[in-house]
Amino acid sequence: MKQMDMIYEGKAKKVYATDDPNCVIVDYKDDATAFNGQKKGTIVGKGAINNRMTNYLMKVLEEKGVPTHFVEELDDRRTVVKRVSIIPLEVIIRNKAAGSFSKRLGIPEGTELKCSTLEFSYKDDDLGDPLINSYMAKAIGAATQEEIDTITKYAFTVNDVLKDFFAQIGIELIDFKLEFGKTSDGQIVLADEISPDTCRYWDMKTGKHLDKDTFRRDLGDPEGAYQEVFKRMGFGE
Ligand code: TMP
Ligand code: ASP
Image 1 (tube, rainbow, N blue to C red):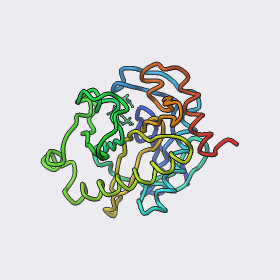
Image 2: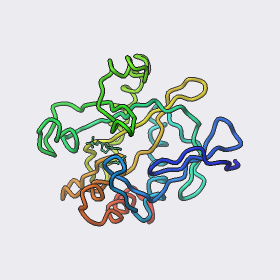
Image 3: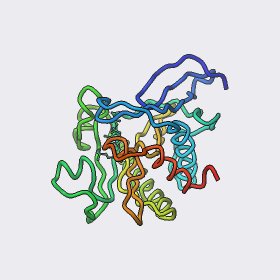
Image 4: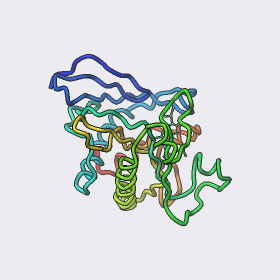
């Protein structure tokens, strides 16, 4: 597959057109941002780790019945994925209170929840990705009820699969963010990435943060945190 012009550059990835109109190439960067791009930095090696971890997990999820955009890993940082139109909703699942949930509701981080939660944010950087509910998402045309139902079903399946997967390597999946896209033939697929950029991973024994909170909160050694998860997943051995 031939890589052609860059069509989009986001905070953590570049996207290139290819000679196949139904496919694009994503190229993962080491750039890290937080607080809607106000904080900027680099996590050396992050691009390669996030690329390989995402692809591994997408393959696991496909086997469990969640369709994804994954097509083929090209090298350390680049992957061919299906070209989709992204549904402008960030889909966040939480298993324990943390981050903006703790702040908004005044519930200390690490508090057990009576059930897992799902929330939507409207993907708009200028607005700071505001929290919206499904009625609002429908009202503004971000998604139809049918799409919301499909996304919700897939997101909870992803949670079941990932929670178990990470528990087996001593990591508690606290929360994560997913994005979904629509292919040219109208299929909803899981898109974007699943990585320490987009998940909260806490070490089950020590409670240590093994994710991007190390960068967001200046907890020290984000490279080490990413490498630790990568190693536990069986990479680099
Ligand atoms: P939050 O607690 O800040 O709302 O974050 C919830 C989860 O979503 C957490 O695992 C980190 C992830 N996330 C992203 O992937 N992108 C973002 O821009 C934000 C704010 C959070
Ligand atoms: N995506 C966020 C940003 O805008 C970063 C984050 O907190 O994950 O910079």
